[in-house]
Image: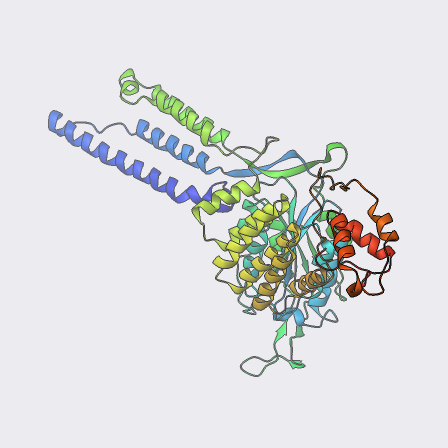
Amino acid sequence: MSAARLVHPEWLALVAAAWALAAAALFVARRRAHARARRLLGRGAARPAARGDALLLAAAGLVGAALLGPRAGEREVLVPSRGVDLVLLVDVSRSMDAQDAPPSRLARAQRAASAVLAGLGPEDRAALAVFAGRGVLLTPLTPDRDALAELVASLDSDLVRPRGSDLGDGVRRALSAFEPGSERPRAILVLSDGEDPARRTDLGIAEALRAEVRVHAAAFGSEAGAPIPDHGVALRDARGAVVVTRRQAQRLERLAGATGGESFRADAWGEIETGAALAAIRREVGSGPGGLALRRVRAVQVAPLAALAFLLLAAEAAGPLRRALRRPAWAVGAAAAALLAGAAPPEPGPGPAPSSVERLEAQLRERPRDAELLVQLGVARLERGRPEEAARAFTAAALSARDEELAALAYYDLGVAELEAGALESARDAFFDALALAPSDREARFNLEWTLDALASRPPEPPPEPPPGREPERERREPGPDPEEAQSEAPRPAEPAELDPALLRRWLERVQDDLGHALRSAAREGRAERSEPGPGW
């Protein structure tokens, strides 16, 4: 039974070991029973009948197979979905620099990726992944296709080391962008020449089938091949012969066909049918009221195995009453049916599923130092509109990551989260940290420059306003003539130093309770030396 066709392939070894242990225990029990019968009845004692034991072992094997959740055939389900989740997987190995599709295979693949991004719908999401000697997921799923187009344009064959061509690892890294249990249609578009000098047979088909992701592929280059440029000259091998790279479209077609996707071959100029590729990618997207999509998924065959196991147990229990009393097969059958009812993989339905945040938090309780899970948790929290919690997850990921690329990505995402929270200073520091680890990251440099401009153009904070409900103090006047009238009637000396001390003391006693009024009076008389209030006001 292929692991790619099981819901729970991780249980395969455990189920097989349990069945083998049960078979061994039954064999030992039969041997002991026969030896006991020979001691009591002599050598002519008959061996215990094997029919009932064989039926029990067969029923137990069927129960174990049902627990694994085998998939056979397909079924159609209606799921609410208006958009598709797409991962663009671009080959950046050295063979993509070949110029049999001018200016190069990689340039044509970048152009095709940009055209696909431009043709996606408003509710579609996309992510970008690359592969050479290993796969790298560059971005999470995002509706920002303009930013992805800029990243696609900046790809080159020096991006990933080692410079091999491991398509299987690239597919696995691309699959990590999808949310487990999501009902949105999911697809991967591979843009590659299909060549692998190591001739690997692992293309990631098993993982794609388990994730129910369709893989579409576009092959660039030509079967005639072309030399690989190397600093202006053709690349040569250890014997001095020119290395010629040829398109291997059959590998890509095998990957697409096995996962239910479609494959495309670029023409001599490196062009593919973008409209056909978009139609294949979005063929499961819902339309009309409610956005219901008709999606074909692999059917989980549990009921037939459970029914067959129950029939075998019933046949074993239909023997003599003594056998039925010795082996309560009906009770075992009922227990197996109850076990299957509770442990069978649930079919997709309209009921609510655990959110990606809760699922990632549960996984992190088992692997608290997993930097990749922390980054995914931060992205999920950011999509939920919780930038403060996302910033904590990104910070933990940056501190836990052992890989510089992953740490740089965590710091970059931390800066984005801080921008969402309005903390420009923290975002600036995070983008600085990202560039320290990845100096060629154009997105981090752009975001840092934008943050620095925002900090420089931010207006100063306004002075604090008076508490609401507090009324200004009313002017208190002593009975007597108006200070303004008294001041206008009093003689005005030419300089403040020459004022009569008695007159000055009398004037200060009248205005000491209202300094603002004194200033206004002095301003009307031309005695104020400055037109603006000082810093103490």
